[in-house]
Image (cartoon, rainbow, N blue to C red; front, top):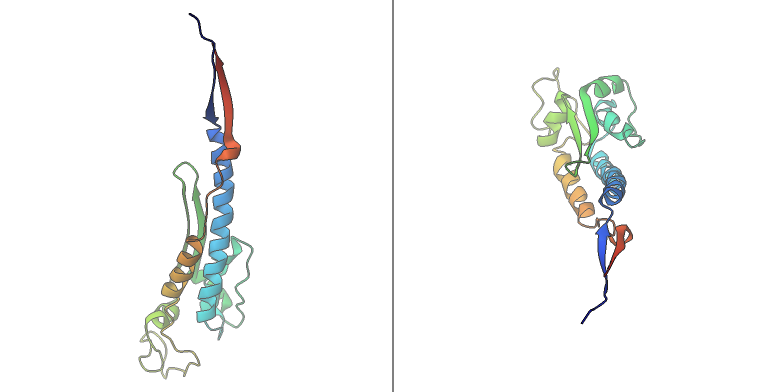
Length: 166
């Protein structure tokens, strides 16, 4: 007795899916960064422009302005760093921000009107929004809320039927 059969099984276009996933994750990362920056910049006042300008380089990676103006914008730009990091092979997509601006670091954790920054010249100015800012914590919450909504691209468009006949 002889049987004839036709069997179909799915074959994944892995390279195609990886390319789609990389494009998707880069878009998601840019959107997450925009959400993060929006939340963080709400906490940072624009007095001389320096503190807000520390976010300039990071905002530039997604063509987003940070709204910094004043006499010390250049100081803030020099003291801030930021970049998007995408490692397609490992599937790791992150952004980094850093600053060496002493008064922003101080105001992140202290009320400068009550506990003045010791690196500032006396007498300390009375700030309208003296801190503590807690912008890192607030940014992390907004980022996590956004990240919880992210879905990966569908796999189905990258599955192709392959037939075996006997």
